[in-house]
Amino acid sequence: MKHILIIGSGRIARHFQFYLSHLGFNVKLWSRQEGETKLKSLIDLSATIMLAVPDDHLHDWCSKILEMGNSSKSKALIHFSGARREEHWVDLHPLGSFDFALFPPSFYSQITLVSSRMDAPFYVQKALPGLPNPIVTIKPEHKALYHALNVLAG
View 1 (cartoon, helix red, strand yellow):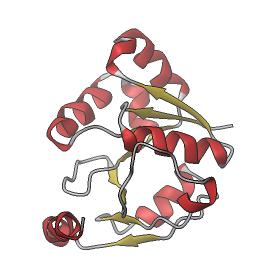
View 2 (cartoon, helix red, strand yellow):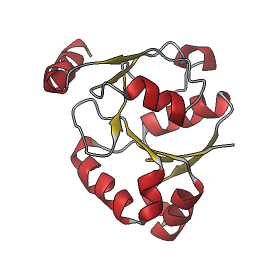
View 3 (cartoon, helix red, strand yellow):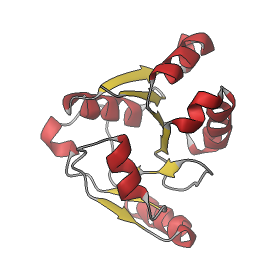
View 4 (cartoon, rainbow, N blue to C red):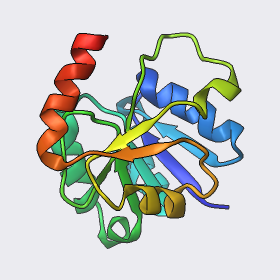
């Protein structure tokens, strides 16, 4: 079974840990309080790494994960930012709002995931086989507008 590591301790991290676990994936959650030694061992065990960190820390975390060893370069690398793009990472923004309370498991599969990478549907299907969510792509140059419209709609 493929292991998935979600880095973060906020709402998106908790919601996606719950959802992916419900789908049968082996999901580990890591936050800064657990220390970098544990992070390194979780990265080594995981086939997919997902970053659920604030946008202003995204670039640093993306770089840090890639620097933690050659093994991270062969892994599926996904982040949840709706505003940012990072080289070597697939952006996968869940189109919706996430409260502190978890939703019923069936609700999550209806959430559309948006990416500015045209290969995202294929990439995600390989990294998270059987994920039922609709995945749509937008042109990279439309990402800022997409994010601004989301903020206004929220």
